[in-house]
Image (cartoon, rainbow, N blue to C red; front, side, top):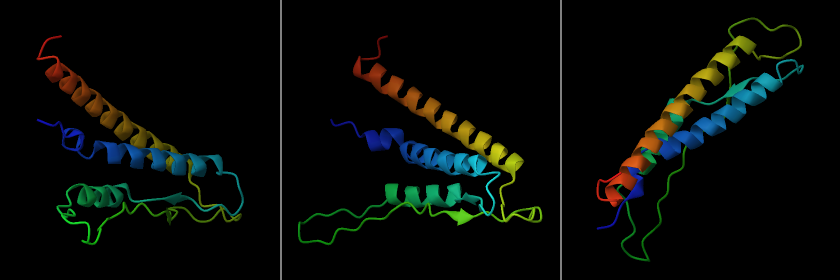
Amino acid sequence: MAISLDKAFGIHPDALALRMKRSEVLSSNIANADTPGYKAKDFDFQAALSGAKKQYTSSMTRTHEKHMSVTSSIDSSLQFRTPSQPDTGDGNTVELQQERMEFLKNQLGYNASIQFLTGRIKGIKNALKGGQG
């Protein structure tokens, strides 16, 4: 009986990839907090993860080599964030407190996914050993 790692890990590998990408975007925003004209960017994590879920649960498989290949991709396109405060005059839209809060929330979600995956891997290892150890 083959072990399906995709089923064992669920959506969490996709969530980790999205969290890593979002960390990069938020870090870039924080790093450019004093850059004149810089526009804060972000993407909708839930929408991107929903796209990943749709890809993950897709039931379309190729059963013949002449069938068309259907693939879907995660929609994680960047969007400019709408600032909650008026422009400071230099065109920069980074709100440092909001960026830090979003970065922290993203990091907590990343850590939760890592803990879930670690638990799953330990469970699989335990099952492979026959439940010992």
